[in-house]
Amino acid sequence: MKTIPSASQRYGKYVVLFGIFLGVAGLVSGAVSGKPSPTSIALALSGLAVAIAGLILWGSSPNGFLRQRSAREGTNAIIATLSFIAILGLVNFLAVRYSTRADFTETGLFTLSPQSREIVANLPKPLKVIVFDPKEDFSDRQLLENYARQGANFQYEFVDPQIKVGLAQEFGLKSPKAVYLQYGDRKQQVQSFRNEEEQIAEIPLTNGIEKILRDKKPVVYFLQGHGEWSLADGTEEGSISQAVSSLSQKGYDVKALSLAQQSQVPPDADAIAIFGPKRALFEGEVTALKDYLDRGGSLLIAIDPKNNPNLEPILNEWGVKLDERLVIDASGSGSILNLGPATPLVTQYGVHPITSAFGNSISVYPLARSIETESKKEIQAFPLIETSEKSWAETNLDSENLSFDPNNDLQGPLTLGIALTKREAPATGTEGKTEESKNANPAASPSPSPGESPTPGTSPTPSPSPGESPTPGTSPTPSPSPGESPTPGTSPSPSPSPGETPKAGESPKESPAKAKDNKESRLVVLGNSTFASNGWFDQQINRDVFLNSVEWLAKNDKSTLSISPKQPKNRRLNLTLGQASVLGWLAIVIVPLLSLAIAALMWWRRR
Image (cartoon, rainbow, N blue to C red; front, top):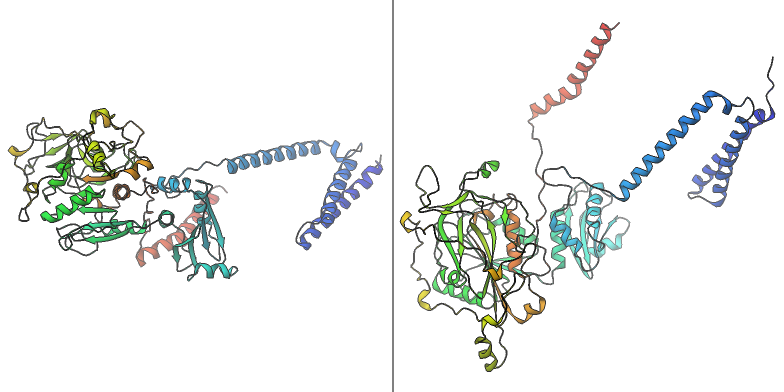
């Protein structure tokens, strides 16, 4: 018996085709015009509605396809597929909206350093990064988006210099691709590229941001003339040119200083560094440095073992004593970097702005000496760098087997670096008030907390008499014999007195009002200078120990003391011409042919 199709079956499919025609017409109309118009949208929606109505009309008849088993199964499959797509889309939407990133690279190549994050998060007003690039680089955008996540005041824009010619001329663009910063009315170039394939790097960008935020260019002098590390490459004394270059990139003006040729420290000095002197300073040089400190200056002293530059008049006044013995680290941690026990690896740091962001990071100090302090009422002392309990200060360096001798050696943990502050009482303008402040009872004032310096009523320690200054002919002190070493009862006591001990999580900061009323002198003493020399400077966080010390000494309140960005490691594989040829034949010819041969053999066996 022949089944006669119903009217809905006969005309339903034509309705569907008409709906598809309307929908396609609407889409084509919108595509041709370049943007959706009301007419194209109406056609597309009408076509969709007509097609759905036709499907319902066509499939709902007694013999329609919707009543067939295959249609029901197909419908279920379509619904399941659409549900899966909807769930997948929702998951991706949530992932984009609330993204979480994980960086598994060794040096955190795709994660901003703590310093970069802090600088951007604390921007006082909008800062804009302008990238002149004809072809926008995806990696550049990712890096800038990472910066933008840290603070709302960070903005960026990609500009095609061939389209916005006026803006390119305004910034003085002279290369195919360049990066500029705009902060208020200040403009500064950060990077300039010879070709468009080069990418923006975090180190110059963060240094550029820090530089443009400064109100003035800090000046740091490095004392020269006594065997100190050279500021330039290619010298017999060794060089700290990497450290000097890093300071320059951060916006510092680095200069050499010879106090043998001028009697006073230049008035524009924000800080002075004495790095690794091997010969004694003249009495006049020591006096000039001491006067500079007394006027509220800042001094960085880094002295290696067996060297005595005769800085005792300064160090004694500040309660600092340099131990002559060599620090030995028997923990075995140095084997991680293929280093011996005479190169301590430090992971313990004091509570201070210089080291507050270090956590358990590693810094390395080859051939170091320890530092001891005695409590001074007008001085706050904060240990910066401390060795492990398995370290000691070794007296007998001629022995083949280094071992701890409780009678002559000093048991760890030992202090390798210390920061000190001293605040002078300001002149009140009348003699009577000055005398009153001098005679003020220190006991009446509360003990200073780590976040505060001593009160203005605290009288400063008088300068040492001229007899205490070293004579020019004094030779460096030789290494002590076992009998000359301090007894085991000698305590290094690097920590401040109980009234000055900082609480966990706090850092010694002074209020702006006090900083204006008082002159604060700052001193950082390190028992090693090699850690900042070329070759050691980029080891672990040695760079940060040096840069943060200088930043703190320069008293730049806007600077961020943290862990700086790291240089990406060079993972490039250098091949000879023969090795490259063998690798090419293996990848292009031998391995594919071998795979085809194995597949053919398996097919032949299964026939």
